[in-house]
Image 1 (cartoon, rainbow, N blue to C red):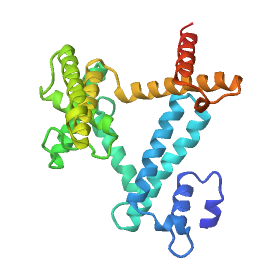
Image 2: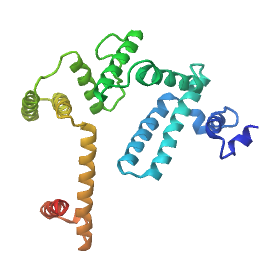
Image 3: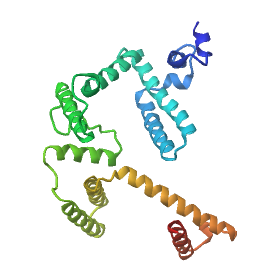
Image 4: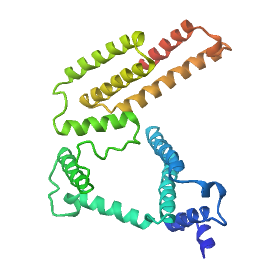
Length: 270
């Protein structure tokens, strides 16, 4: 019986699928869940993926377990809605990803040799993906780079695609020169251009910074996350130091907070 499955803690994947089906039931389900569609659920899917990454970065394995469950629920949610609309179901999603993994790993599941470097396996993976894109009438170099990706990540993927066909600066020094050029243009734009033009120049600078990260073999998204973490840690140190004197940042001067920032920075380097 469905109710028995829903309350069976060992019900596994069938249990979760049934829970979602019941939540979306037009007559007996949850009003909020019934009202949702792909567009309204998509932001939650992105958020859950970031929360998975956050738990990994903090090495919080208990938290990761829960966050992976939340992310899995997003897949179940989308496939339930797709099933209701007659597009596809959970089983076809599982079959499609399983077939893709087998096809993309011929050195594991086929006749190809496993005697390859990680770089060679990455190159082979990209060749297989290119064939898949061609089968979807995605013949352009940049076709298939998802528009909905975070902008910094999408910039990196676009640049990698372009570099594979030779559209790239040969030397890192050239990227540094371009970064300096874009920075100068932004400074000039601040004084002479419209807000829209300033935004365009700022975007150009961010795009070049992502490219510089690629040339330096630095993941710009990871580097910025680390910078965010460092800023948070040091600012919290400022707040803690001020609190000892019964003060808050809003009660303090910039000079006071700068001094405490330098102290926190020095403490980290000891």
